[in-house]
Length: 320
Image: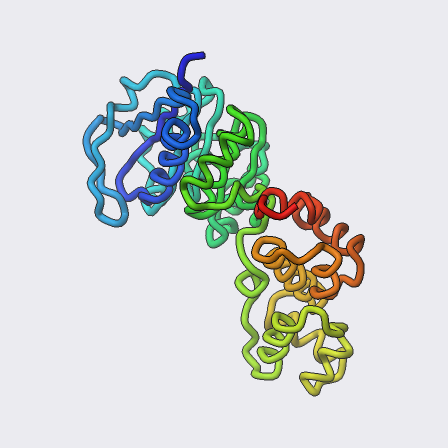
């Protein structure tokens, strides 16, 4: 079959890694994936002139957007340039993007798609620092702040920066199969793609750091001892507070209830062990405070949409 055309839209102050990451994935399909001429990647700007990225890199496009043919996959990166979008770019996206078989945004490129109305009625994500802004500015978009990427029909959105590589690998897997995607991932020295519904950030980054020292110490204790008794009563005792006072203060300073924080910390600990160790699932479930593999399986499915065995197969395929 003819190569699938990938058109990357460039504009002033775009983030270079947002488009070079996916570009390298598609390019590596030929060199490392063993499938020649699977993709033809092109870049375009509004007027065909070079643009400068947010890091100062000057990029010369292949053509103007007006001269670019309708692509199989349209990629819109993010960056500071999405904060003041050129109305001509928005109009072009509104008119031409629906003709593409796939429309993809990386990081804050979601704002460009939303401004063009392409995300109305769809689930979408963006960089975790901008999800609130996206939801407020575009109430017709169902913004989910946690997944590293979301695919809703022909439109896919991804979180910050490197998640564009994960999304590109997912598209390669869809087009050419898992083995090709795995070869590309190995060539780029990344794990075969993270599941799209893996969270963008750790429990510690997702939550605020408590102001008071006793509560900060409890946060550190939770992260370092996931198998310990992490009930409200036990944690309150460590902070020298009553359970009721502790729960209220923790929620006020950390931004979530103690139980929710513990759940995220245990999930994160289990994910790290699945990714980085050869320990069995039963051993990991005990080490992370779940007690049984079934309890850990339910937590993974609820939060990540994949059982621990499937998560390990995707992220640490050398261990089965």
